[in-house]
Length: 250
Image 1 (cartoon, rainbow, N blue to C red):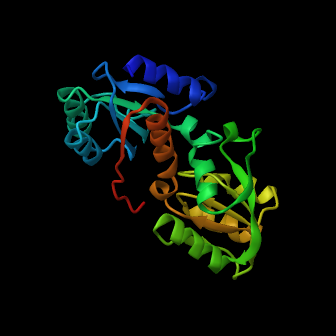
Image 2 (tube, rainbow, N blue to C red):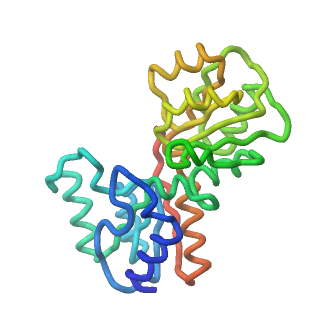
């Protein structure tokens, strides 16, 4: 498919125009016109770009791309090296942030819910552009049991904050740096809230409101959406797809 066809398809499929975001969604660095091989990854770091070059990729699709609000505008140092490599090898870079978090089928929240076996999963549409989700487990489990479920699904042990080892069945979650949605989650009456990152203030919010909180990793909670999107594009358009997971403990 052509670059223009890919951009337009993803703009429609991910409902890009519906979101107010912190970075541009869509094409960020222009490369070759024809797209046959795509590489997907969480963040457009140098290691991902280097691997895409090795794999002869025509395009890289990421969740965390470039040109974030309030970042320095000058192209020097690390940013210069990344962009220089993309331009040298004529590789397109496409980034999809909030649209990929929110997509009802392939988004980070939807795919994390499936990984954890959460049923009746749904976005709370009236909150935060539909980024906060809720659902339940088929059977109530202890906090320590659920912590193990998270570790098995994500390949890393979460940080658990909460009073004791009480039962968990009803949950809310938002992947990535969404720790401050804990207060909304508590107001919903759920037993636990999951996000990727944690802040100092999160501890007090969880303890004082009697809600279990799990910081499961920003990178870890946001690996599944971009993989699902890459597989979808490969099926729909016959593209070669490689997901490259660059290890990140945060």
